[in-house]
Amino acid sequence: MELCFFCFIKYFCTPPPPPVRMSQRKILFHDRSTDSENDSNDQNQNNVTLQRKKRKRTICSTSDSESEKIEANDSCRDIWTSKRFLPKIHKFSSKDSGIKENISRSAKILDYFQLFVSEELVELIARETNEYYSQKNNNNINNSEETGLAELYRFFAVSFLMTRNKKLSLLEYWSKDKFLRSEIFGEIMTRDRYLKLLQMLHFTHTVDPTNDRLHKIRNVIDILRTKFSQAFQPYERLCIDESLLLYRGRLSFKQYIPSKRNRFGVKSFILSDCQTGFVLDLLVYAGSSTMVHSDNQDIGISGAIVETLMKPYLGVGHTLYVDNWYSSPALFNFLHNNCTNACGTVRKRRKGMPKIDERLKRGEATFRSCTNLLVTKWMDKKEVYMLSTMHTSEFGTIIKHGGTKVIRKPVCVLDYNNSMGAVDKADMVISTVNSTRKTLKWYRKFFFHLLDICVWNAYCLYKDKMKEPISMAKFQLQLIREILGKYHQATKRQPLTGNNHPGRLTERHFPSVYKSAGRNRSRRCVVCSANDKRHESKYECKDCNVGLCIDPCFKIYHCEINY
Image (cartoon, rainbow, N blue to C red; front, side, top):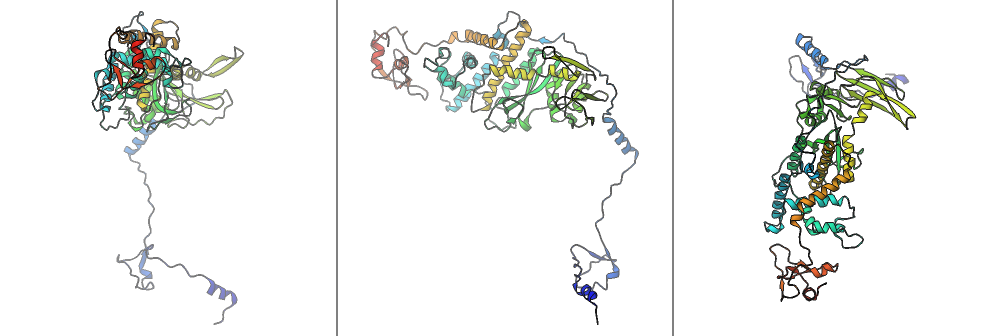
């Protein structure tokens, strides 16, 4: 057979078709039997069909029940328009606002502080501290080593006083160096006793495993939250914001907030009264174990936090200000349905937000509204989105630079800026007099932060009652004086020098080995201490009840008037 050149190339150079894999393509006979590999494909070529995977198609039903369901879902969505918005503002009555407790104008500053840090709470802390100390020492503890009500109040006073006398370390507060000496700390409490209380401070004896990450301090938090709500009835405007306590140790629910000064630490959600700054409630973030109570799934986790904090104050016409972490159309509709006005910044991609595509110049604004909500897009240095149930689309003016510059802003922006600052102001003032101590346990540091909040709340109540200006620094200093005046005089210890012993120079004295029921087997020598030396001795004079070095301090102490 003769082939031309092109036929030769086509015949010999064309690659054969790929073989058909039986695993990929299954051959069936009309009688549903499977073909074997040994059978001839030629014989069965006309008797087979290829079974291919069919694409699933969704069939839309047009039944009456499903069409009603679709219409119901559409009715739940807000229809946004550019029409003028007329808000439905809930009215608030302030006749019951103010201090709930029956406290007179002649009350002392300590009385305001003890509205929160009461003697019952301090006795509870003393019991838990003694029990914890006893467990650490295998139940080998005597009555002289236990703490009590008066000593813990003095412990708090020393901690407050340390904020007014800044030093590089705790030991410097009891230093005998004449350049660092502060005699008041040694007169109130010895150094070793303060450090021991700081080490053993405890708030619960529960050791069972629990899902609550705050169980170490849950008792104190719950008691203080109750006392905050019982002491004060808020005025109309409220705000919710985050507060961050600095803590850089290991902690599973430690948070990072770059906008805060501390950035790392324990985060709390704070509900404050805008007029007085009083902290009404707080919710400590503890990850998945954060205690929030909400049955409304549409408002999300942030909305559940708002509902938990606002639950006692819904339905009376309060106005709430929040930032864009909480705000959403679903939350604001929930608040409006519970007779609470709301205003705040909002993220433009929140679920239910309208799409606003207008490009604005600086100072311009555009608005969208629905039944209960008004969304404002305002151009400042960057785009600002506001959500409100109580404002209109009007503009207001503010004067800056001594009256030389007038700036126009939407009314909701001006109202938000004037009200949304109570939590940040409280953090700023507390930071100037904070008594937090650097400890290995986070819950002890957080307890001191709670004490600072109690001082701040007492300060807010005092100003609201007395109507007189006073700085936080003066208020705290007067509080320290009153605590020591009430709890320090009855338990004032004798000095270590032993000069008041009547027979130390005339009677016969003999040294003896010091024996103690505790672990301590030595006493501080009073002669060495009087000469700015620190020395522990195993010997003492039982008659004088002082520790002394056997030589030469024992002789000096009993022979010289001024040693």
